[in-house]
Image (cartoon, rainbow, N blue to C red; front, top):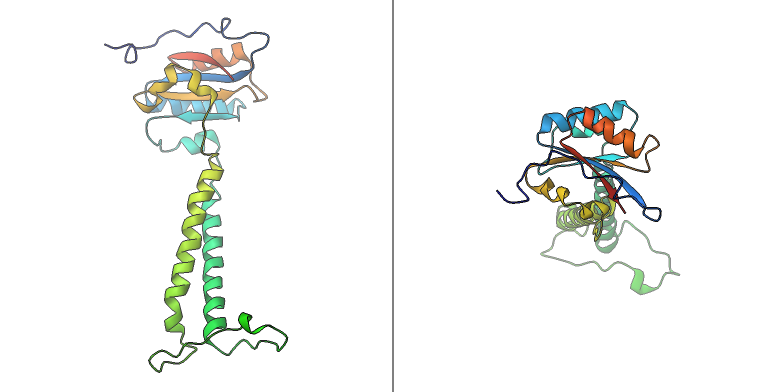
Length: 209
């Protein structure tokens, strides 16, 4: 059995981790099954903790509700930018290929539309505009989904205090961690650690910045 795979049954000594000039990030509690981490998270939320997060090797159904996480605004951002792309495509094709939009004489010629006569088809053929409208809708939506996802998740994240924990590496293997930040109004190093141990934590660890 390797060191990483060995079970952890005791907490790290918290007194050795805190100094006068060391800023505490928070406490993480380790669990070995989904049920315990959900119960502990729900108990922490009911106890008034709000600045907390759960880390696991896979998505956990119901953990968002236990954490009190609100639905993400990402779908609405994608919808809004998709509609913006569609509107842009409609205006672009209409301005370019139709005479519906009169241009004042004062506007320079290079700002006027340039209609193409293709196979004798009407200039104002909406069916011919669909590829442009479709592509702009998809492009605006796709780029918004990607870049907004990175921004909302604060990525790329080159450093996080949890990276200092040797236990936390198992969050991608077979362990589940509940992290409570020191910025939470109910946070107290000793009381929070005791609270987590009361709710089936295998171990607790104080994390410094």
